[in-house]
Image (tube, rainbow, N blue to C red):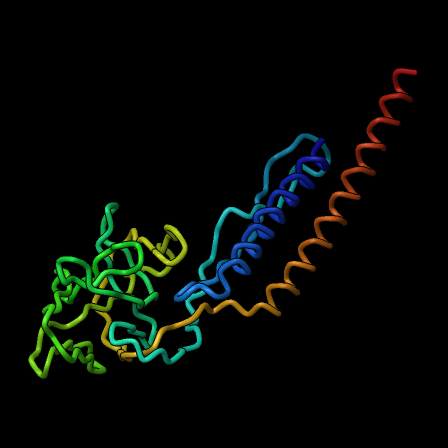
Length: 237
């Protein structure tokens, strides 16, 4: 029975990894997307018998790759990108959330919002307001936003206090369970957006590898099931 449990935990982990790869490939063109992986860990349990224990591989932790994606020039007045490992802060119905997707537009209240309507926040945690009559809006490398040469606010950029606490919520939103800190090594670019950091060739290679590993495990499970059936037939025959 231990053999079956060990193989089953491996197959479940490989299935989760395959789902992660599929999600990465589906978002390889999503602005600000961060690819995700699965971390396998060893779980040891006491069992009866000469061995005394059994070791199983479990995939229970998801790892978010924070490597920066490629920057693309758009010329958009409200398209912003960050060079560095910091995040924009958005106000959402579920609380403040981090993102690297810097595509914004003014809403009816002249606040900069992302495509989902979440407001971009400044360094003090207030929504970024742009006067509706502003003819020229500029963003400096330190995040200072100006309208027609008049300073408006400084866009906030933050880093999670603990990178391991980042939890994905939706495609490009992240919750920092351990809190956030202001970033001091980020540089802003106006008229640019950051693409996904997914490498499609690497992800396809990974998908093939995971699929083959899953097929090998399934073949082993089938043979083990046949072995158990034959043993039961022999003992009860």
